[in-house]
Length: 406
Image (cartoon, rainbow, N blue to C red):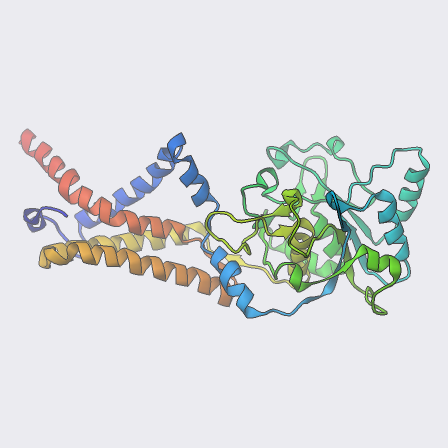
């Protein structure tokens, strides 16, 4: 706590140079902290903080309690089979047989997340080419963009007949990073590339995709509807046997991919972390198959169910106002009731943190507004430290230095 004698010289009025300068020091520390975290000793903390967002609380805690109905426009065909060797995906021939069996079922769009490996000029290649040449078939290019999208070259991509890249921002860090966003399209000097989910949505509802691109956002946050329990899922074996209701696939988007709904698979290579993970801080098991993530993307696009975000300058302004208020409050309490200073300073941080979390989650839930107030919480935590540093050290040293020159 600052020396009591100092309060006689500290101006705690609403408009004062002391309050303004101490507030600026909070922002200086906010700028310096990221550089301090570059040290290897802080790596575990940095990784934990970098992959946490307050809005995850909505998906992990609030969304499950809403009991949203199942998506009715999408059907998923699980192409994974349980064997003694673990979860195995259907081979090329089995995939083609399932696709052939779906002919005449009235499917609007058929999305296939599988890498067909038939070699050119082989009999299987010709059959594959014939089956996949249908206008309503969209293939997923499972491309790893390595460092960044700017390094894409058109010649580096092996195209399907009608395809899109099946890539999410966590691809290069699938084992540790949470998938929250995706890139709808990438415009290069060579061509325009579209996400696999967008290519599917475009065939099903082209007007919805046009509205998406009018938003003109390089990245879109995925508005997750839920995990596998929110989508109609049927096993490939049921399709072979015709074990499904009549018109089950009619006018539907059908996605083919590996989805193990038993939750007992030990193959995590196909799974991703999402904000729906039951643990928002730290890690349990990855929770969602890529096909389900794609279904969530498509569902969001065809229903125009997007989040809006708040511009950064508004968040910075709000952070400054909050810090300024804190400095006025600390100065006033320190001058009037110094014995209550420590308690009130601590309570201020606790109350402000709670209000920030409440505001973030409530705006996210009620109004579909995404606002990242993590900076506000950090600023609130630093306010007390910086205030004491300023009143105990910075200003006294500065005044002492000035007095030496008089």
